[in-house]
Amino acid sequence: MAAAGGSRYLLTIGRWRRSFGIAPQFRALAALVPGVSHVDNKSDFLGKRPHRRHPGILQLSCVRLPQALADAAQLLLLESAMPNMEKQVQALTNYLWSRHLPVEPEELQIRAVLLEKKILENADSCQTEKHHEEVLRTLRRTTYHWQELSYNEGLSLVYMAARLDGGFAAVSRAFHEIQARLPEFQPQTLMDFGSGTGSVTWAAHSTWGQSLREYMCVDSSAAMLELAEKLLKGGSGSGMPCVPGVFFRQFLPVSPKVQFDVVVAAFSLSELPSKADRTDVVQTLWRKTGHFLVLVENGTKAGHSLLMDARNLVLNGKEKSPLDPRPGFVFAPNKKPKEEKFSMVILTRGSPEEANRWPRITQPVLKRPRHVHCHLCCPDGHMQHSVITARRHGRDLYRCARVSSWGDLLPVITPSELPPSPAQDAPES
Image (cartoon, rainbow, N blue to C red; front, top):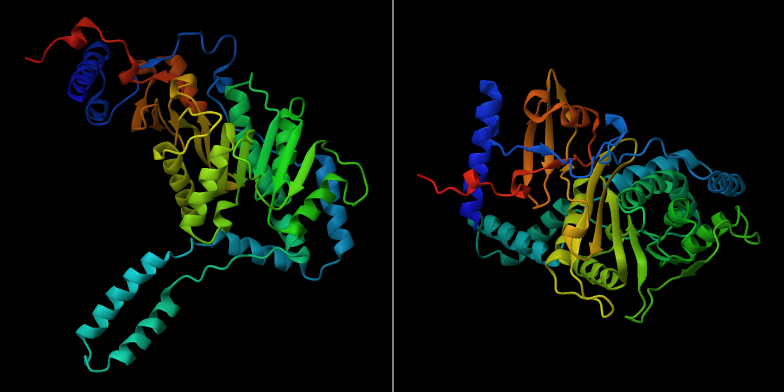
């Protein structure tokens, strides 16, 4: 099956070259690197819109905190009168962005064995006890010491000052992805695991405030929950909440039958001490997901690694919900290196065919004279580097590609999606 598909694909490439007379440098790229084929004109994708607003554009303009949230945060900071707040904010920001994943016990054991073997090769085998001590000293010196953050009242305020706006912007981008591609989706319930300052609730209310009626905020820190509640009440503990239907608790709902339309874990997986803990949490969150599971982490190697592990766990695992046995698929992977650098993955239940299957741009678009370089993640999971020109692919696609950004969808049909033609089905001579 794969061989037949490959033959059809090569014949398609050959037909492009004969028909359009591609320049020699583009012929090499077309032959060696899979390229896109046609603009998706099945539904007049542009309509009367300009190219800069084609339906694959998903980036957000400058995101601002809701004024009520900004005012409440400023009031709480003024009332706290904490000394050296700016220095504390900078120190916490630096720590969070330089944080690595905890070293797993199995990995530590492997390091110890290799280190001991290396030491024994160059030492007296009679001094075994000293060798063990040297191994331990070396491991302590070279191993990253991950520490769990305990968010008391003071650290919660510092975290709010450091991460409230960035967290709100990152989650808003994730919700915008869902709303832009599925405008008919109107969730009624949402659960936020590791809710912290409650920025997910504010972002969800800004996106789906007309339909959401229940927000479940789960955080192990009582100080964080209290701070989030104060922010909802304008900075005090007695006002009326700006967002109705918000509930706070320190533990996940126990019943496996409790599901939510949208489940979010933003910057929370990195707070768990081991891979086993992260696996348990992701499986639990997926069971409680009715439609979308949104995972967001820092735009670092550690954050990306966490999301890839979670994605693979959901896609390859056998974890099923008692209420919805459908498998999951990736609805939106994205990494947006703007003012707020973050990684996200959105997983949903059902079949991938149910979603818009245009390929996604995975790197900054390189604009060159009369051609554009696009790195794409295609619907079948394969990566493509495509060189797009107006002469070869048409003016519409060329202009759409030039105005697109990292994370957008490109409205094209890849060769694997084209219907087979008689020439494509002909056997090779």
